[in-house]
Image (tube, rainbow, N blue to C red; front, side, top):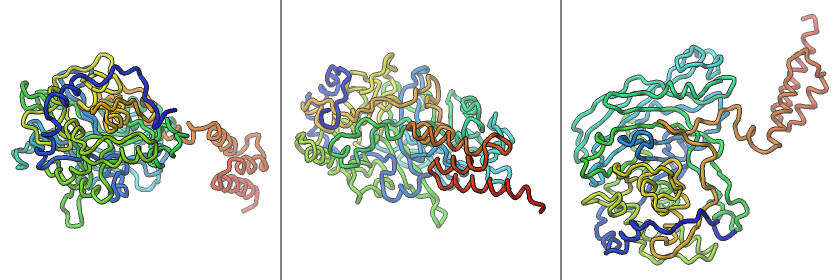
Length: 509
């Protein structure tokens, strides 16, 4: 296997649009002089010191794409709470009540949002006398057995130069799809998902709830770039984990400036109420991975708390990135010459003649040309493979942003041809064909233990044997032996407790 792993796929070469944009005339030179504010990129899973300690507020990814089955609309998806263990009860995963989960849309390229969609959540508990998330099988979102539920309000704020022009509540008390506890608790989770899809006036649609984490990549990169010997490259680290998602499907005519200017910039933020009762921004995300692997530790928390129009302070992190130097040190792949103005042009301004708005102010946003029709057969490398409906023209769920970004960082647009990647080319679950498109969350009864190695399945089976009801063929010795064989002290205690109970039952107390 070659360094970092080759992505393969028979690429035809860098898309003509990008090559033309960079070669035609001075975009690189314009990049630095135009950046009075503007640069950097966004957060991801546990990417900054402060936000890693408060996962309810941690925005993991943002996606934006022209809806494949409704091309007159754009779908925006924002995810929170990284690494949700499916069996992580009894307190499963809820949105924070003291937060504002915001989706920003800049429709004129000035690095300021003209539209802001704000989600706020409330938690409801039916029975405080039980520890259970659900008290029986759940068949609907209003099922009495769903003990812990959430609802949300959705507001649309219109702004100009960061001044509020209007505020409209466009959804009120909408139910959230719950955490997928397991097949016994939620035998038809797909039906619960459908009930959480809510249509709004004017042709928009909204959803909030748990979903499979759609981001696919090998996070062993942090072990000195795959351990320095590629021994575990190709493992989808996020397989089996869930996230909390909000999704919005919006008419293109609502979000773009005009038919003649169809390009929008999109990012999300989380604001948390502080001790004084004021909301303070604690997380921010547009493009994937950059606050994770571009900004150094000293800048990460400040980036999360700041806004696109102030991004000039992070310019050196983009034009002098650390990652190519690390790859050169470990794998002897020569780092491209600095300053990296090619990264400024593509990721901070958009690709000329594709998704760069006129009079653009460079800033960290996910830019999408809403007039580009969805691809009949999407290519995972997007624009790099000639598919202009994909990343970095927005971001589809199936786009392999790790491979595409790595190839660009390693100089693909500067003539240093490469097909580097992490050997994880697609999500472990298929995405849906209609809104909200996300794969269903992994259920707690099939978490990483149950769907992992054969040893994991053996443990599950041993636990099942150990906890047979009283009166079955297993005797006391089998009960304890099976528990010990499972290798878990907790199961041994359960076995011993059941044995004690059976003995006590026979005494005259």
